[in-house]
Image (tube, rainbow, N blue to C red; front, top):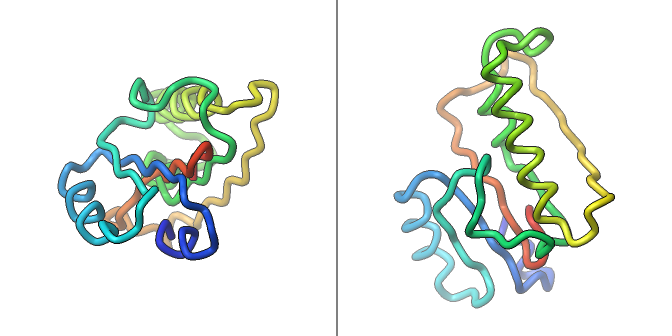
Length: 127
């Protein structure tokens, strides 16, 4: 997704993942695309992303990966992790009073727990 967006003109992107392996591999893969920055971090606590520095955020599977148990009645630790994640992303937005979220949850039967996930923070935009 970052490479596709880069080719469309989004040249200021920050992509965050909790896997150092993913960060290293993606940094190498996209080394020829200036403006895409790969950052190691936890989306529930992102001191590496300054508050009010992001225009747009796109979740690319992080939320799906956080949900366990029943999606209709998740355990308390799942609710807490999701709350921390959403709160943290909203803190990075330039316009604090606006937090537009499009959350689509796959059915539990189609979820793949081994699927890679990351939150892409694009430019002054978090994707």
